[in-house]
Length: 294
Image (cartoon, rainbow, N blue to C red; front, side):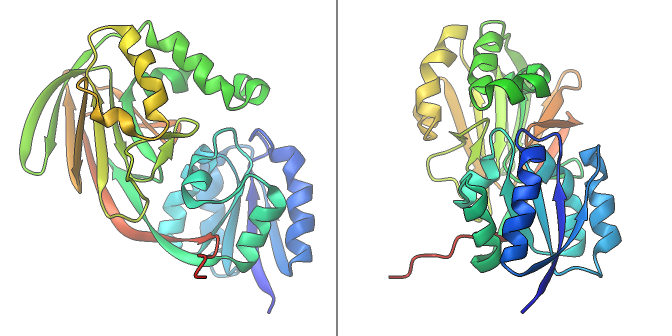
C-alpha cells in the first residue's frame, strides 16, 4: 500500500543537508510517495504541515529536537502521525523513543514501526516533547550556537555546560504543585515530559513519555562545583536522590520568579515566567520500533 508523506528536513540541522538525499532514497525504496518541503526558518514548519494536512497520511520530520518542537503544535492540531529522522545534534526525543541515529534504520521504523500515542508537556500555550527548564539550561542554550553544535556535536553540550556552571548564581522561585507551594533558591528548575534532554541526560530514573505525569527537579546547590559532581548521576536520572536536589511529580505545575525568566523547551527559548506547566496525555501519535513480544 502506497503511503503519501510530507517530508520536512531542516537544512540547518547538524546532518540535515547531507541526510536529505539519503533519506529520500531510503523512503522511496520503502514505498513512500513523498511531498518534499523545506523552509529556511523552522518556525514555519507548522504552517507547512497545516497547508498539507488533507493531502498526506503522515509527517516525517528530519532534524533535531528544536526542529521537532517547531512542528509539534501543528501535529496536535492535525493529528497526523509523526515519523522521525534524527538528524540533529542531541536527538533526545529519538533516544527516548528508542529510534536509532542510523538513517536507514530510522526509515525502516517509519515504514514498519508501531503507532504509539505519547504525552506532551505544555507551558504558557507552547507544547514540548522532552523537558522545559529555566536557569542553567537557558544559559547553555544561549551559548550553543549552530556553529558550535555543527563542529563539536554532542560534546558541545558538555563543554558549554562546564563554561556556564562555574558562573551560575542561584535565583529565588516559588513552585506550586499538587496544591502545595514551596519556595526555593536554585540554579535550575527542569520539568520533564519525556525521559532524555540536554544530549542524553535523564530527568528521572523512571521517567517515560507516556506516564501521564511531569517530573520536576530543582538544583539547590550552594557551590558551583557541586553541579560537576552531579553530572555523572544525571545520565541515568539518579541525581534526584541527592540532598541538594528537590524532586517532585505532578500533572499541573506553576513556577513564579521575582522577574520574568526565560524558559527553554526542547532546546529553544519559547516562554517566560510566570509559567503554568501541564501534561497532555496521549496528545500525538509517533512511529516507534515494534515491541519485541517474543
